[in-house]
Image 1 (cartoon, rainbow, N blue to C red):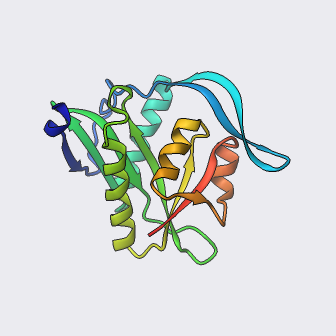
Image 2 (cartoon, rainbow, N blue to C red):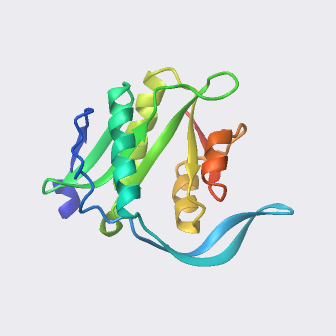
Length: 179
């Protein structure tokens, strides 16, 4: 079984610019959550989500900055190639500074639904708890599959919403996970 050959490793700030060169972010989205008059509603909104080269480079830079500032960056590797990664920023968020931000959680297309994302999420949550957070803050893609994943882990609608995240990704669902 190929998942038995996965290696999970914490990453330092020296993440190479080509770190995600072969990473398959692609997601075929058919249904999304959208805010309606009565709260969240599932609506058809078909599109393909993928990174441009500029977006891929920006993700690498964000991972480098998170690691450099003392945050959490962990990746899952198969045969030396990253197939998933998660990052948690060290700077607290929230009115009471009770959140740490799960800024990244991605699993390469061919590795989804094999437990990689769950394992990365649990490691990120454990790190956040060890670093004094009460909750993880998650600005999550609104695709139904993504929401099913986070909700299955116990994530709920965020009590407090970070304005930066909402402005950057207005269609994202703002979630939290109690540690």
